[in-house]
Length: 424
Image (tube, rainbow, N blue to C red; front, top):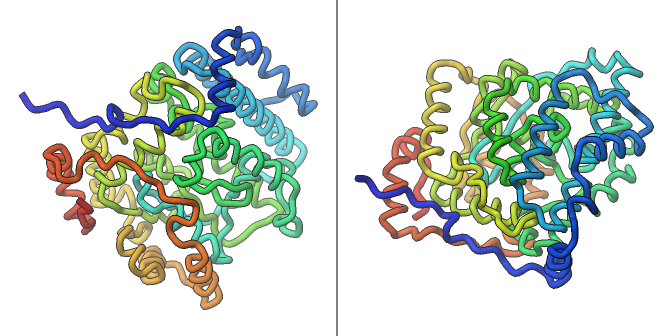
């Protein structure tokens, strides 16, 4: 019998909470928090309608998805008081955004005529450099990115003349940095700010059909439901939101980041046939170690039992990653991901010579870079040294252990196919 695959989650331990968070949750243990902070359908929908003065959420299957989600959160997520407060606040933001987007399209049907042309998606395993690559390329003026504030508060649609001074930037910043005050170690893992670019899942909450929810909650029944749905519905909203955001402020291409798109890239390409994909590659053992630390912390914001539902087995366990990359290699070879529409970037190459790696990616997908863009990218990277927000320390799982060696043997085809160095 082969040994059980190594599960890093069994070794991960959360950092101690700040005293104010620990006290809040401790007091919550003696309260009827479900009544104090309700997460039921009637309460949430009524509040969103009252806050916006709007009533129409749109006509797709969102309500079914929403009901499955909130039932799973209520019955499986084991929220503490702090987590419950965060969750109600977040759900209202998503519902209100959905109401306002639906209304904006009703008032301005011409938005539907907007064309999203040849968007560029940065994809790859979490913790493989997708964020810094996304931020670096966002300095190129040919790209429009979705920033945190417009992901959270997309209406009214942003205007170019006020894009850098919109008051929603500060509003979003206060909300999005709250997790850093709940779990200060989060600041060393992932930079958050109202005006930073975000990945696609951060503006797809309002579909209520997205991987983002089981990246935030331990909700196995929602995962089971989600995997039976047609994700094209979510990508239709993805495009709907981009059309809205570019209506008053447009650039030649959207630059987007979506590690969670990897299992469904064929569906993405059905929605955006002319999309360009930039794959970031790094030793999968190293990135898995880091993902466990990051995800554990995210779950810890809201619950005292962060691994109760065994969420994200496909990215937490190496065999899931082997299967995923095998599918991606097959899609590259059979033309599902068309040649000329994707690039491969090795994280260690990017770390050693960022501009060479970036120029190589542009060349692979047929983009050009102006001298001005190159100067802005170089200046941005020079001003953002690694570790500027503190060092993210995480358990490596024992790089010299037999478990890690076995994992790397399972990943051998991935390393050879893309030329990815092993870091252990």
